[in-house]
Image (cartoon, rainbow, N blue to C red; front, top):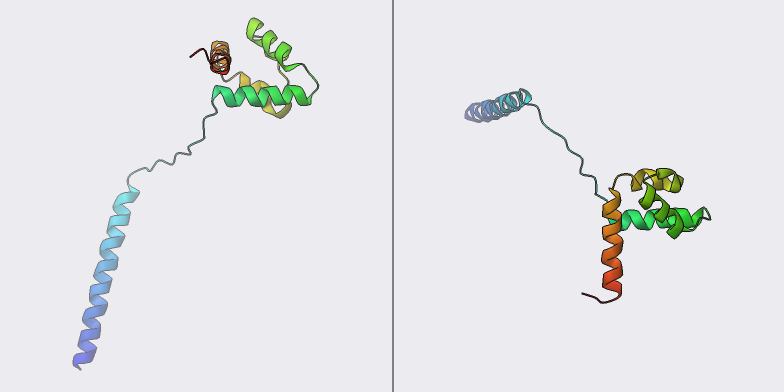
Length: 111
């Protein structure tokens, strides 16, 4: 008989824990949770590389086409191949020039 009473106490204890945990979960349901996907941000140097390769793959002169885009702001100088046009438009043109100057200066060891 004592064994049955002990089992009943254990079952009641487990039920209380489950009930308490269930109430905690229900309380959480009243709050909205946020799910945020972190997308890696492409840097200017990455975008320049992608655009350069896309222009090269399509048979264009990348330097001429990128210069045309930077000088005019007209995105049609950049091919839409591999999403290059939409990528390059995510940056301001001065950001592209700044990145190219950084690489040029570093390459020539001016810093």
